Length: 395
Image (tube, rainbow, N blue to C red; front, side):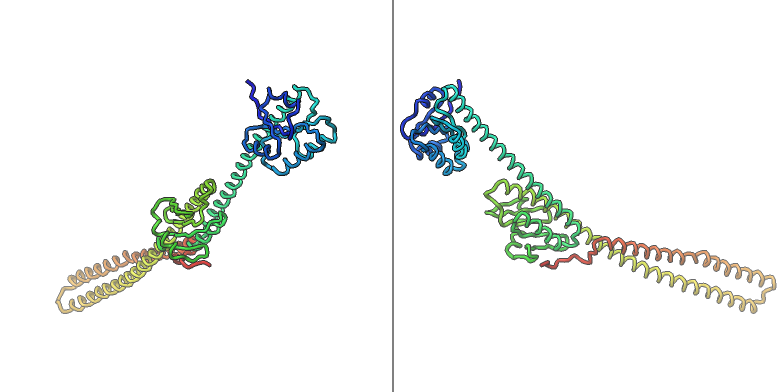
C-alpha cells in the first residue's frame, strides 16, 4: 500500500476543486489562516504546504512571503508549493524569488498534479536527509580537526618537556599546554627529592595544595561539582572548570589531560634519575679522592720502609765486620762469613728491586682513577647541568 503523505492546504475560504481531487492520494489538512498553518506545522505530521488557488490577486504571494520570512529554519522539512490559476513567467519568477519549491497551474491534470506534489515531497525528504548527513559529516570533521589539534598540542608538549632541566620549567610548560584547553588548574609534582605545588603563575595556593595531597590516592579521576581530580603516579592535577554539561568535551579533556600527565610523570622520573646519577658521581668523587690519598700515603710509607731496612742491613754488615776483628777467626773463616753477609745484603737488594715495581703499579692506579674522574666530568656535562634539584618559583 502506497503511503499517503500529509499536505497542509492553505485557503481562507474553501478548498478548490483541483485540490479536492487529491484526497484519495494525500492526507489533506485544510487551514484557513496563517496561524492555523503554523500550528499544524508544529505537529510535524505533514510533508508539504500547498497554497491553494486564491481569487484575490497577489494574496497567495503575500502569504508565501510571510510564511518564509517569519519561519526561517522551521520549514526545512517541508516543501512549499503554490497552485495558481493562470500561471505565467512573471508569477513563476516571483514564486521562485519568495522561496516556493514549485509553482503549478490549476489547469494541470489530476495525475500530473499528484506526480508534481509527490516529486516535491521526495525532494524535501531527500534534502532533509542530506542536510542531516552533511551536519553529521561536518561534526565528525570538526571533531577530527579538534582531535588533530589536541594531538599536536600534546606531541609538542612531550617534545619540549625533554628540554626541561627542573620541575619548575616542566610545570610551566604543562600550564602552557593546559591553556590550549581553556582549563584553570592546580598542579602537584612529587619528585624523589622535592614535592612541588604550583598554579599557572608559578606560586602555590594553600587550599589547593592540601586538596592535591589528600586526593592523590583516590584514583585516576575523581569528580566533585565542576572540578575533577586527575592522578597519575607522581603527578596530580586539580581541574577547577570542567565542562560537566558537555559530555563530548568532558571526555576529550579527560583523555588528553591524562596523556599530558603521563608525559610529566615520565620527565619527573628522568629528572630523579639525573639527580641520583649526580649523587652517585659525587660519592665516586669522594671514594676516588680517598683512594688517591691512601695510595700516596702507602707509597710514601713503602719508600720509608725500604730505606729503613736498607739502613739496618748496612749497619748489621758494618757491625759484623768490626766484630770479626776481635773473634780470632782464621782468614778462611772470615772469608766464609763475609761471603754470607754479602749474599744476605745482595738478597735484600734483589727483593727491594723486585718489589720496586709496586710503586709504579700504585701510580698507574692513581692515574686510572684520575681518568675515571675526567670521564665522569664529561658525562656530568651531558646531564643537563643539574647542580641540585631546583624548587624555586617561576613567575
